[in-house]
Image (cartoon, rainbow, N blue to C red):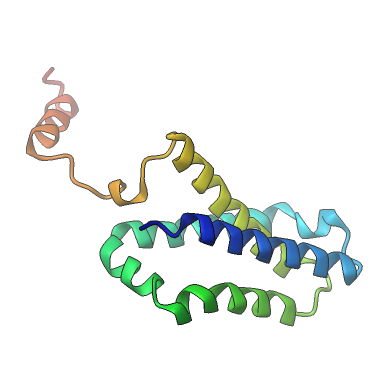
Length: 139
C-alpha cells in the first residue's frame, strides 16, 4: 500500500507552515526562494528518494514506522523554524526540498519518471550485452 497521498498531504502542510512562518517573521518571498539553497534542498530530496529507491523493502519498513513517518515532518518543521530566519536560507532549503519531492511525485504520477523501485533494477544479461556491443562499435 502506497503512502504517497498522505505523504504529499503532510509535505503540503509543512510547506504551508514554513511559508506562513517566514512571512510572519518578515521574510520576503524572494528570500525564501533564493536559488542556491532552494535547489540544494531539491537535490537533497532527490538524494533521499534515491536512497529509498535503492533499498525499497528496507526503507519501506523503516518509513512505515509511525515514529518515523509522522515524526519526520514534525522534525523538519521544528528544525526549519528553530533557526533564526535572518536571510531565509533554512526556509529556502526546506521549501526547495519539498518542491523537489513534489516534482518527483508529479513526474511519477504522470509517467514521466519511472517508479522509484525501478530506478536500480538490472536490465538483465541481454541488455548488458547489447550495451557492451554498442559501446565497442558492434551494431
